[in-house]
Image 1 (cartoon, rainbow, N blue to C red):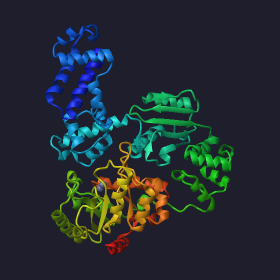
Image 2 (image 1 turned 90 degrees about the vertical axis):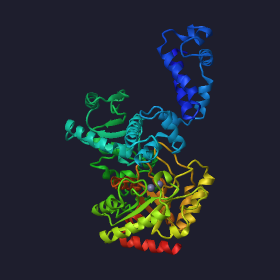
Image 3 (image 1 turned 30 degrees about the vertical axis):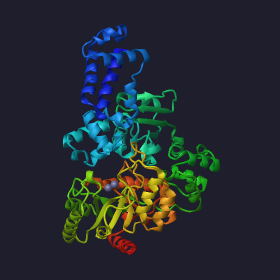
Image 4 (image 1 turned 120 degrees about the vertical axis):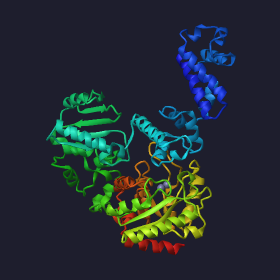
Length: 558
Ligand SMILES: [Zn+2]
Ligand SMILES: [Zn+2]
């Protein structure tokens, strides 16, 4: 083991001890040892234990640990700390702008254990509520995490959208008039993207040369019809090069799930044998109605398209109200008036303001006296903005025992209640189910918020039995939220068809923490389209009159 590794181990040990709140004198002595060993020019392995103990900044305790590393290749004490530290906390040590002390606060007080959660907390303005975290620190942390995550190779759909638009612009300039089409995960509106794919009639060697000038690193250059490259910011792209007569067939073959394609091939033969002028020709040749690329996922959708024309799916312009939003009464960044005015100006008919409930102290959740005050403000604004309506709501924490966060008389003062889990997310299936089912059965619950608590690419969420949750929501007339934040998209779209077939209503909600957050609704719509969600099954597509009707029925549950 060389000096660098030994020094690194001591430095990491010191940081971990600080994170775990150990005696600062001890951790300092290891940090100091690391510092001294860094400057040492002789290899430690060439020194006797006696000589090691005599080095500047090294005593007998640390000396023994140096010998231990030289002899065993390991530092037992460091391993002990590593084993009781979640990997996400170790990742945080790689983020600029946060030292061990801040990481300890993030972990122990904010209960955050991964970079994804931390990024989400920055976006929700939660860090600034803690000592030592100013606006600027929060911004720095946010930028560092985004940078770090970009280098992990996986991206949310929303993170790549602008990139794709810009790249296609450059492509157009370079290769105008030649057929090129984006396919793959992006065209299918997948929530997570591993690779961006295009089909083109441009020749592979031309693309390769051009990509090199743009600082892309070429990968897998052996296949002449298949150019794969990685951008300087870590995005993997792939070009499927083909002849003009095979263009649409290749587009088709790269725009569906594997199961879909396998079934297609087994039933309708090889698409390459079909002469086609567009993708529709492929469906016509098979004798089935067209299936949009985002819906090309399952065998069931092929069976459906065999029978009849697929019903239209929801579009973004069919969202009539913003349901689930936060103002600066809790952790949002805009005032209630700003949120309502913006929603009104953007053509929405209503805003459901659902700030956090009191248990969400980190989000400045509302105590009953502040609820009263907020309701007075809502009434004032409703007079001002009519016929636009602000509905009184709350995003009530589902407490550990499954109850909602207020007594019934307070819950009764809301037009509707969104119930969500925000605390004690680490729980086994049984516990999660009992909490959720209690909340669903509560007569004051109208919407179940972000069903699993997942944060895409960073937190898997607590385990749930989707079938049972859906059944309970139907039985209790509780709407299932499709939280449209691109990092949540929760309920997972793969469960939506089952939910609507069982009789559930879905609600595509932006969970907006600012005016800009309204735009996230679109990401919910994109995944809802994959699931074939029809507009009439989406609560946020209800007009204000239909919404009032819906609320009357909800009141009858109470
Ligand atoms: Zn929430
Ligand atoms: Zn929320």
